[in-house]
Image (cartoon, rainbow, N blue to C red):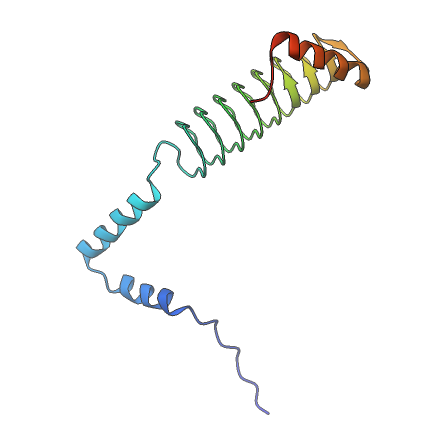
Length: 164
């Protein structure tokens, strides 16, 4: 039995028709189609490449953020500004690669920070400044895991710091 070369997958009729139509467009038809495509894709030009963002300005490639400004590649952040590659952060500024941080500024590659500034590669810090590669600190003082969560629960209530 002779072998036959596998056939190329066939395009759905609508795609094949669209390609044929595009290939035959004249200048005015092409420009009209481009303008229509631009209008449809660029309805939120202030946030190019973003999806599901509400009240954001100047953000790019972000997803499901709210009221953020000038952020890039962030997701699920709220009221953040000038952050990059952050997720689930709230009211943070100039952070990079952070997650689940609240009211923190200038931090990088960190998680679960609250009211912190200029931390790098830290986790579970509250009110800390300038630390690198530290976990479970409050006001730059180390705590055991258990003592940290007890103190933070009380401090968060006292300072009225909460998510949301």
